[in-house]
Length: 233
Length: 323
Image 1 (spheres, chains in turn brown, cyan):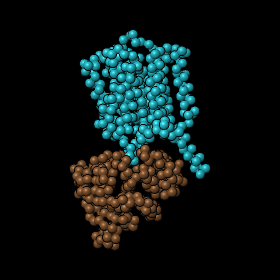
Image 2 (image 1 turned 60 degrees about the vertical axis):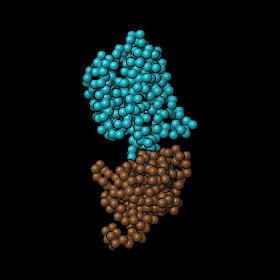
Image 3 (image 1 turned 135 degrees about the vertical axis):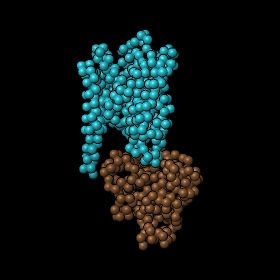
Image 4 (image 1 turned 90 degrees about the vertical axis):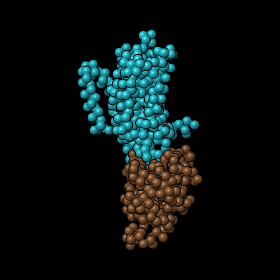
């Protein structure tokens, strides 16, 4: 996926300024920054929920900046929204089956379901429980599992670590690492910069809707400004 | 083909189908046994079943409360009457045309209205129905305030009963098919979380419009059959907001989003209206109001909604204990 010079507005307010980024296949790219930096806006634009006023987004050589969100999902981009967006009064299994709504995904539903269960065994134990009754970490795993059910080529996660205990965060991040090793392309939005840099191949740092820094984890970690303001070193 | 495409889940055929067929058979033979006044009661009960159920097809499955529902009923009634009077075709054909007109109207307004959510959608639909009333009241093409009368030669109370029975039965059947289809699955996701549904790849705009159009079609059929029975149609009766409110009350009481719910609600509320309406005119509205308040406070999911969620809960507990 490549993003070239997009501007995004909320009403009159410009929230993303001339943003460009690139995600290669089977790469885990972290989109970092503090509150209000434009991370979530970027993800919502990439998934078609917002439209850029200028610039272009390309995926697999298709231009997707003008497509509706459900068409983009159909091309194989799956999003795990902030707050997880689960169907809370459906069971775990129903949530996962709903993820395989597309005809293409439905044919392989059984096989994908087994893959998701082997990635997150706890979901299999809980498959008949209501999604709303799960713990925060389990809900996050379910949200990721549901995104995988659509057989995506790329998944985008919005702050999967939000509100989770450190031990649960490392479980979620381990799962993302395993997915990447299975050739999944991942875009990870995080405020937890330290954790995200541990598993990312490359990172982009956003500040006030502008690209402030990009590079591999070591470069970002060693940047003087990042050390001072984000990592507190 | 049917199972894989139309029906997503396997169903318990005996448990699901037998009671319905039984009820249908009883209702089909009823005119041979019951008095004319009871037959007329059953006819209007079937009309309310058809109306609350077609209301349910859209609002129950999507969660968008349609306060302009009566527009579909009224357009169906006008469509049926005007084609019957001008084209001289069989009544059932005129009714279908009425349903189609109503459905086309729904598709036409779905683009602007279904972008709205919650109270905004409800208000937009309420105003649309009111606007139709004002337009029809002043529009010579539809005979303005005078409306139309169905000629005496079409009078046939037994046939009217069977037509209404057919409309109600097909509406219920259609809801069953929708709930077990991909459309139903999509609507279930949209009702719970529309944004997530879209990001899973569900074309929410399309599926909502389809449900809207189907709901309008059946409300239009019921409007046509009702107009034939009542024999007159004019703007105040065709676009009467009370019809919307009654359909809402019936499906809420019985349980929106369930198949049996709106039927139960229609039976309870129409019986109350019928008997108290005669003995204590207008006081039946107070009874209506009290029932709605009690439902909202105690069983917000309605009678069937409550029963179903309790059944699911106990089933989950059993599964949990075994595991």
